[in-house]
Image (cartoon, rainbow over all chains, first blue to last red; front, side):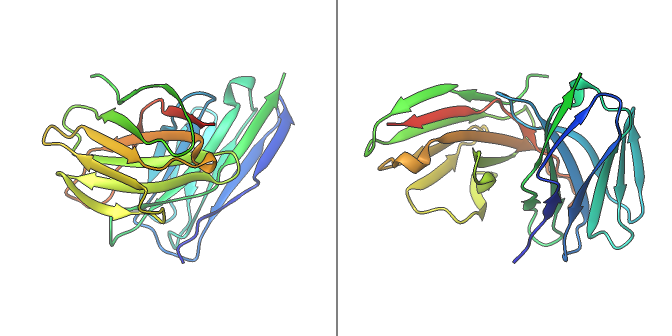
Length: 111
Length: 116
């Protein structure tokens, strides 16, 4: 079974704090995508990481792909209320173009 | 460039009825995927169509079906609706790359289906 385990499932923190969301699997992915979904809308792609060990930054968000391409993390520095949302990771398999989705991390940033 | 559009946005049906949802992908995108999203189960993959052919399928009963037209527009049908089918149904289109990776999903706003 191809699984992508995402943790934590829920996180509620104060504005200004830092946080990290993890996405782990025993499978190797050709790429790992991170999405953010706000209530009433569809998920929106934040970033795609492709190379093992790759680090990408999007303002206060830092994304890392594990060296073995089995795991990824999303780190937010100085979180703001606008970061509130559901964060989803999705791994792309080499074999069949299908994305394997994590269960999501519901993030609430309190002012 | 226009985004992915889904119609209708909201739908209320009763048990036993059937429903058809529509999705228009981003121009040039030939892959369309459908997902069911519920608070308890998260985002569940239904199926993916590419060039009018179903390329991948999730673990859903045969009551859930879909199709894709030559213009890449897609429809999803659910027959004999059950209470548990109440969910947000999301459609996503993708530009399939020659590299085989980087097939990012561009989602529509979803159709909120309520089954009474």
